[in-house]
Image (cartoon, rainbow, N blue to C red):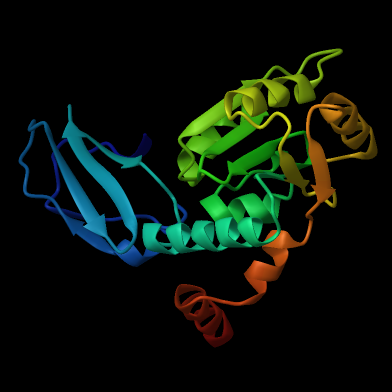
Length: 231
């Protein structure tokens, strides 16, 4: 919950501060509740869903999801990746590039320098393996439903956790594409990954698979580009 104001009364209108990301376009929201009233009113404005809650003379904004594009846009992107995977005979893609995760799911984090991967298989399953400090970020900025955590401690090897997920997705003996050119996949982590998957499945470097798809901008992306040019 993001605390906005604590008045002795509940105002009929208030303006959302510009310091809160992604809410500048919402402008003024009208409240129809009176002092001491407890209510929740969900508003679908632009592409964001928020809740306004008035209780005990406090006003809160509950930030549910901060996706910058519509669900239709993300669905279209996913279908493009799956089509490209099929054309390249890839059973699953292991994404290590932060920009790929962001483009495909909206997931945005500063933790991209650490080991984390987003798995997409041909059945459309999406699983994120990340550290505990990035859990809330993944929940609040993306549409990823299946988030797994590896424990970042001395001597830990997250490739073991990754292999458990691959087993669940029945990817043993399959062909996997890997984004090797990524900040989080350091030389040491790449060696660990290769060793973990040795004699388990076949792997190929697919660092450019999503990058090439991102080159062609969608209608929604062009809207952002034009707005940026205006600014």
